[in-house]
Every structure is written in C-alpha cells, then in structure tokens.
Length: 442
Image 1 (tube, one colour):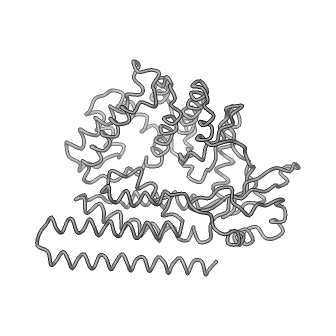
Image 2: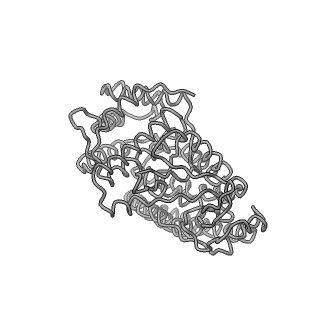
Image 3: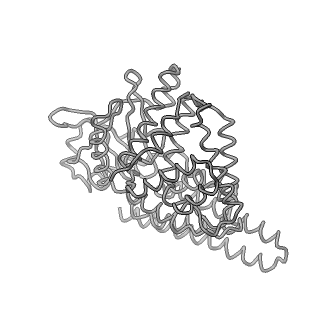
C-alpha cells in the first residue's frame, strides 16, 4: 500500500515538474514578445497544454481529480475557455477497474481474512467501477438469511491523495481564469469540493448516511434503499444488500409508455422536494447509475450516499425566500435577494446583475400555468436557458461558482436531465407552489 502511495506521489511530482517547465518557457516567451495579442494567445495555448497534461495523468491515477474534473467541466464550464473545458471533460470518462489483487489488499487490511471468508461466491470481476472505488458481488448471511450483497471497495491511497489532486487542479483552474481576464477567487469553491470528496472517501460516514436515508424513506412508497451491513464495512469497505433494478437507458430501450415515464419523473421530483424542503438531507450526486428502475413495480432504487449533504433550516429559509423573489419577476428584488444569499459578489456590475435577473426569470418558464404539462423534451427552452446562463456567467468578473449551492444545483440539473431523457410531460406548477410555500424545519 505504501508503495502505491509513493508511486502516485512520484507521478504527481513529475506532473508538477512538467507543468512548471511549461510555465517557465511561457514566461520567457512573454518577455521576448512585445505584442499583447501574442502574449494572450500564447498563454492560452500554454494553459491548454497544461490542462491536457494534467487530465491525461490524473485520469490514469483515478481519484478525486476525476470527480472534481467532472464538476469543473460540467457545472462550471462557462467560467473557462472552451478549449480547456474540452480537455477537462476527459476526466468524465468511465473509470476502468483495477486488478482484484490490489482491491483484495484493502479488504484484508480493513476486514481481515476471517470476515472475507463470510462472503460466498465473491466475484473477482467488478460489477461496477468508478473514480474512487469499485463494486464486487457476493452472498452473505444478513439477519439470518443469505442475501446477495454489493461490496464497495475503495482504491488504495485515494483518501490520502485528495488534497494533492485538488491543489494541482486548483492551480490549473485559477490560471485558466486569469487568461479570460477574470479575478475570481476559487478558494471557497475548492474548499467545498475538498469537503465533499473527503466525505465520499469515508465509507463509514456513507454507511451512516445510507442508514439515515433508509430510515427517512421507510414510510415512503415507491422507493428502495439498500440495507448497509455494518459488520462487514469499514472506512474503505461498504457492504450493502444487492438491490435489483435496471438503468434508465436499459429501461427506455423497452419503450415504456408515457404514463410510466411520467410516473418515474414525478417520483424524482417528489423525492427532491422531500430531501431538500422537508428533510434538509440531500443525496446530491445525480449520476444516472445512482437510480435504478424496477420495471414491474416502477420502484426507484436509490444508490450512493457518499455526497449526501445537510442543509440547515436557516439556509433553506433563505433559499425559499430567493425563490419567492424570483417568482415576483421583479429584477431588483431578485438581485437583492441573490446578493443577500451570497450568489454573486457585491463587486459585480450592472450588466451581470441584469443578466442574473433575466436568467432566473427565464428559469420559471417550466412552471408557468399556461405551459402545462411541461414537455421536458422541449429543446427550445433548453437552448434559451443555456444561452441565458452562459451570458450571465461570462459577464461575471468576481463571483466564483456559488459554494452554497454548487452541489444542490448539480442535483437539480441531474434531475432535469433525467426528465429530459424520459421525455416526460408533467404539470410541474404544483411543485413550484410546494417549494415557495414550504416552511423548512430543523
């Protein structure tokens, strides 16, 4: 295990050296060039080359950078030059599994050989793999009954590499922003990334979140949450019951009727409203693979609680107030509420504030009374909102992606994408009423 960590550290040091060499060479070229355009163009090219180096190396090393790269290339794409986003998006690629002998070491170190013997028919071929771990299937006695279980095993050294990975990625992101002429402090954004990624690498915490979420869902029909097996779990190993279901893509391939697609869509919307407005406890990872569908019962299986976040009563009250101001369609009220909530910096100019209000008002379109049921395959709305969001983001000069809502809105964006794939047609006006009239409780 120590050898793996040393190897990773050496690779990261080598990467830093190569990136630094690029920077020194570019500084020299800047001094030799007197043309501003040439300097700007050269700096952008250097940043893209640096991004390419980092993306290629970190995608091989797995870990936090893959997760952070996904966020930067998807949720913060408008902050960076498109060439850089294209490179960072490579970190979204499907993670290849690692050799069984390596993950078995983690099992031995965390559970011991005796507990490993409890797993019957343990498959050495992973059922799934991701950026920080992979899942193996086995059978285990659970409450006196032999059950199929999923064993989520973390790759060695992942938790220890989070801070170094993010330090490299933050340096790159800050450099890319400088090229665009913006002075945006990314400290809080990366602090939030670090907080969530360290949380995701703590499987003991994820187990507790799963147990709490399962208890909250106990009396909610239509949903299934796996049962965590504490006796065979640790900080790097999480064992849970295996829950059957198929992916959204596979379910859609069966050509389900609109009524069934709408039912799944409403379940997702109902779940989000419960999570945020009622519980203040949100599973924020919108990955399609985290929601499986049971075709016969149309139950939703909810998976992966590593990025489950809590939102205080005070925060949710502020969020509801912001929604109410957006509903007023009063640009000044919207901007004032956004400033109070910390969505944008006080230093932003009139144009950025105008575009903020326009973006938020246009976001209300799906909830308009005359547009029900809203058709989520409505590409014209998506294009308009995309253009409004891009115009607003590119007008910003001081405001980073808002720390408070980066993961919450990641979940919302994922739900919208899910509904779009479903081509759902749902009257969503009651959801708006439910949101703005909600009274969050601790």
